[in-house]
Image 1 (cartoon, helix red, strand yellow):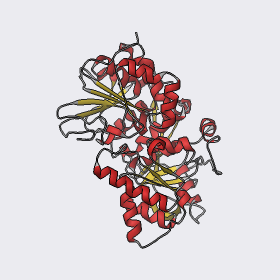
Image 2 (cartoon, one colour; image 1 turned 90 degrees about the horizontal axis):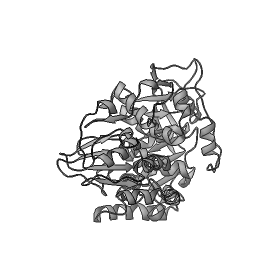
Image 3 (cartoon, one colour; image 1 turned 180 degrees about the horizontal axis):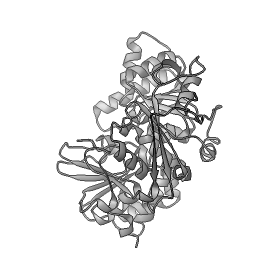
Image 4 (cartoon, one colour; image 1 turned 180 degrees about the vertical axis):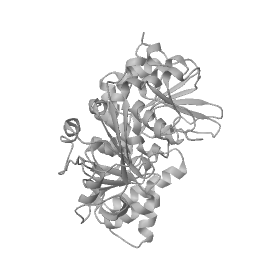
Amino acid sequence: MGMTIAEKILAAHTDAREVKPGDIVKVNVDVALANDITAPLAIKAFQTGGQTKLADPDRVVFVLDHFTPNKDIASANQCKMVRDFAHQHELKNFFDGGDVGVEHALLPEKGIVLPGDLVIGADSHTCTYGALGAFATGVGSTDLAAAMMTAQAWMKVPESMKFIFKGELLPWVGGKDLILYLIGDIGVDGGLYRVLEIEGPAVTSLDLSNRLTMSNMAIEAGAKAGIIRADEKTEAYVRPRAKRPYTVFESDADARYASVREYDCANIEPQVAFPHLPENAKPISEVGEVRIDQVVIGSCTNGRIEDLRVAAGILKGQRVDKGLRCVVLPATPEVFLQAEEEGLIRIFLQAGAIIGPPSCGPCLGGHLGILAKGEKALATTNRNFVGRMGDPGSEVYLSGPAVAAASAVTGRISSPSEVME
């Protein structure tokens, strides 16, 4: 019996020639990632273990992206702990200050994660890197500490589910809409501890930015990972960035899947996920009248340059609705610089948007856009749980950048066609 991409990557990182779902394996880790919230816990566990040296400092990546620039004393102290540890162990992949970007946008951009890699991160959206053909998954901070000590991790081999997107995309539909549609179909626990293997002509037509968005939200279906086979577009993105060799894996024709689902993209409109779960996805035509107080464009899900181009294309010559805050956060310094060079930042400012630094910002209710009780936000982020972006009495709706930008103009959740006629 053949193996899936996920099984091949896991096998390649063990001493076994093959693995099957349910096997418990010890894998060699290529990248171990943490941020300013999770790294302090991992550091404390590492120090409690009595070890003084990292197994391989080049495999450890720390990114101070969640509560930075520091929002308060507690976050400043957390960042100082990480900073001191990074300097002590001479980490080359430590991102602080003006080098910080949202971690899951930054690592692909820097060529730190590559096809065929096995990546663990003390952040649930580590699954983003599956769009590069890697096996990437979130872990707890103590698991990360063990990987810092050994450059290895224990893992149960998951089953894989295949999702095939066929047909041509409708106007304004992108990766965010496809993944929200998928989650709406199977639910937030429909992929529990499984790999979502995503393919099909519609996915092949997407650029890397949209694919990264899809893999990013695999965790919102409970999945262990969300993998898209690396192809020519992937290699065109990766090759100039890669600083070490990599291997492209693809599933065997006789690989085993827990299920296979096909979707016709002719039936997929721009999607909006209603509170308080990503599975509450509706097509834009069924949203109705939903007034909003804030729009957020950014995050590891939709803060790349391609997302900003879509949003700016809609906001150009328009004004943000009076009384509504539109917060735009480019995901990395490189994205910010490119947006400035292309005139996108000027478009946002002229439209009345607020520009924030490359940061997670309001996505997790951190800062730079927290909601008050009773307020509603439409965001290009990945979660809309109760209290996710602020007060537990607030509400968060999720969409792609096109719907978000159009809604910033109208003051209610709207189709881009309403403001682009």
